Image 1: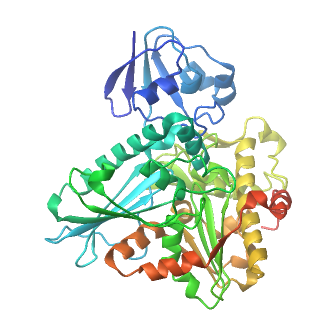
Image 2 (image 1 turned 180 degrees about the vertical axis):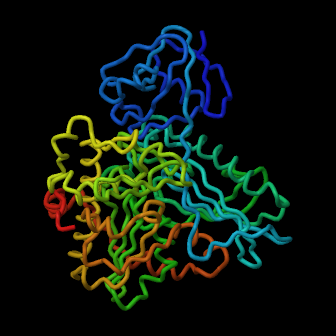
Image 3 (image 1 turned 30 degrees about the vertical axis):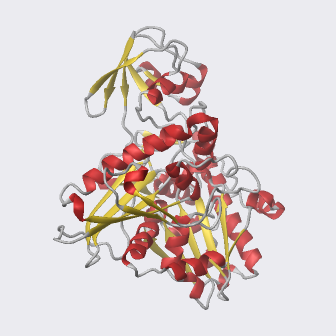
Length: 507
């Protein structure tokens, strides 16, 4: 017996029907990527598939997480669907767009020269830059969705999957995805002219890429296999069929990796005479605070995947049509979408702005409660809705980040007013409206007017290292000067977190 699978690009594929196995696991076994931020636990509602022919029972979790209209149209949660007979299903393709931009990015036609590739190995997305080693000019940029996403949206879920016997599989699907991306990136150049590859990522993603065990990474005292620079080879890794040197950036700790280290080193924050804050608010909210006297304090805030719009009822990635901005003026709703397409859902920056606008217009109170008339069904934005749970997810995320910043300030014994510069890196930060972020309590008000959006700092720093403009010493100086604060071990963080859950209505 078989299941016929139809994809967004109209391609078809037959896969075996295995009785007693969910569609979620059946699709995984066939290397078919499906969004599953909760790693198949049935809590996020993202692994939606549409039944076109055949029969699938409607479960209680289907009823909880899908609308009546969706159920009527055949939509089901793949993790709750256990087909007993042949069926035909539609599997939508989820595509995230990574930010590949930073201040100097300038795309040029390939030259007759030697090339290198910088790679930002993100939890949600992978970003690539092909550039000339001679001139440093960017020839091509590319981004793709991390294929491991179907095994969970966050690093904790991925570690659990690795520790439960899927370590080799997670490496395999990541390598296969990177092979395809590098092939697309280099199709217009002589393969022999590619001379170097540099990779930066968080510590968990580096472990999964290398096939390292995550057993000691996820429990105290959070011990990585290594935090040192890894020098390897593209053929050995399986990225190419010929040897090309690969350099993987060193990290600071289990939860503050090489992407943050190399991005912050590129800004030379450790040499600043005034306190600086470096924030990377992607899937993991990582931050680094320097005190202006040669010391740095780092941490990773448990913000959850809300900034990537996971666990948001109408949440989508940074796809065409994603609502990235919103205003409400005199009762009129205006939305801004990626590429100006018709709204298909809220990305991270869009849901943050939406919550700000609801607060500003007294449609949400300081506790985060929606007005009575919208409490049950949510606040409508065209065909989309903002639910009570969506607002709660943003409250949890914003409080985690704000409270983590307070902890670092306490450790450095400085005030928010003393910070002279804030560098905001990462995809979420690239689209973030700073005024609204401060308005909902994501960032301290004292940081207003001090923030610089720097785009993909990890990609920029990796390229700088490959070209020699960022040195080992500069990276090393920041690394050895950094002290990590474990928030899970800090009683003050728990108190701050509860204290900062409510919104400030003085917008």
